[in-house]
Length: 181
Image (cartoon, rainbow, N blue to C red):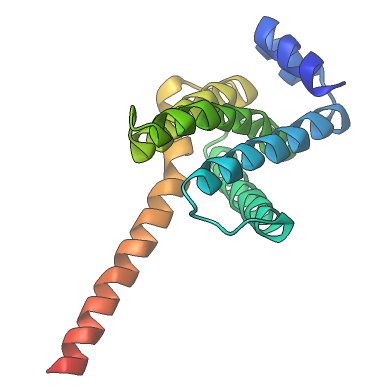
């Protein structure tokens, strides 16, 4: 299956495509989605000179995106398997790649932000919200669970990362106070 046919089939019959598509067929489409989505993010960040130019910067961003999404898909799958929902972690990872295609919205929004019509941070969070909504929908269909449970499972990895950064921030403040006093 090509990327275009997978996306059109997913829009027409999402439950059927998720159920009948093999991992291999979904893999090419998912990895293409990751490549195009991260490339769009790279272009958006280059518009504002947030990352250096070059293939090495793109490759670093791509590997970071693949690693983070792999860990998030594994965490979500582990949580859902522990609660009794049956699903496939590899399909979840590849379907997350298809949701990364929504990052392509960042390029036109970035051009509008460069013209001072929009705010780049608001553009990024808008795109992030669309991706989270698509991921909740995919989790619901892949694991056959309720919307609330899918939303909880999609939010858990982000909450874990946020709490880890918060603990690191508190530790850094305590360390600085101890160092100064």
